[in-house]
Image (cartoon, rainbow, N blue to C red; front, side):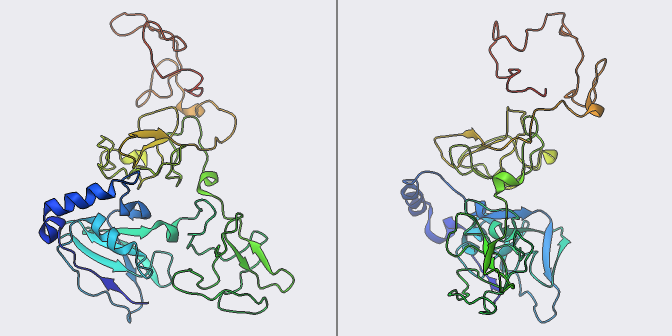
Length: 339
């Protein structure tokens, strides 16, 4: 598997702004404005090293427009699974491995960010997992998977290629089985078996209104793809990851940085700014953790205050939360049962 680098000129320098604008206008004929970065997870300030001396990265290629352009180059390539982006020099280095590849390690870096394709690093699956390229190699019954390149003990029709991802003995879904990724097993008595990899929707549930949700769902309840939190298009917003470090604004995953009734995201549809995400709840609504509850004072921002004060600092009586008069609001007890 080869190592790729690419030099890309900024769009304006290559083709001028008018042709580019016309091209973008044509592209907008389809719903949504997805960024190629949506296919990647980012690790800020991180480099991915290969530990074998025989594999030495080449020189950095500079003059790349931005990380989106790097993603656009890496995305279609079957042997590009990640890339480094130098935030200061705008350099781009395409990589044929991820942090889960053999003989690699992550290292803190002051010069670049690491972007890895989601299909290779997510531990859950989207839809039926046809695109899953993780390293799970054991079935739901605990049986080791047979290598796809082997025909024994269980013969089969599949031939590994770069496109179908049938490498090693990793769980895959080459036939689009609705049960998700599977594999042939090393047990002659069990020809094949599902690997039981959870869908990203099922892998993490929502407690309360989901402010602590850190799952990997990147679609809204209507099926629209989420906009990345670190991008300002197609919708501008105030929730920049660097300004909300404790909100888990990773990539384009559903989150709840503003205390809404449940996790949500901005969408890639220019006509729909934001939508809620359909996520399973963790069970019956519970009260906040006891250590966070106070009645006579408050800690931090006061999320755990459960006292009986009902007058403002100016002496104005408080409106009941279950009333919409004189002021209408979204903070109803039914939607915020744990608050």
